[in-house]
Image 1: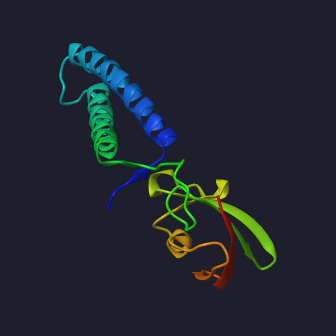
Image 2 (image 1 turned 90 degrees about the vertical axis):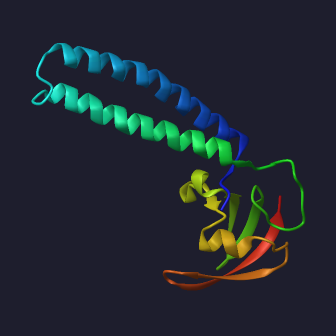
Length: 150
């Protein structure tokens, strides 16, 4: 399944990748200093630096793969139906809320950013203003009315 990212998400991951690449140099320096201490079999600093190196390299590979495979969300794409990148206004139980449908990598429900893969996000996709959408939640089924798609 493709990973959807906004332009901002792409930029944040690129920034993190640059920071990890700089950290790579710091870790290499730590490894050299630890090697200079002698016996590597009982050298805790060396072991610690190797673990940090492995973690850092794994994260670099993960982010490079993510950026290579990412599908950029076109926030200027206007549509009458909800899609990834849409801001939707919904009403449930007399309460109005706004949600932005984003890729799972950028989801932050507390900030109103819901994943396209979440039950709520999946339920809203391909619906239009005026549609009623039922979503199964931990506290039972909730009926949402889509008020507007922005």
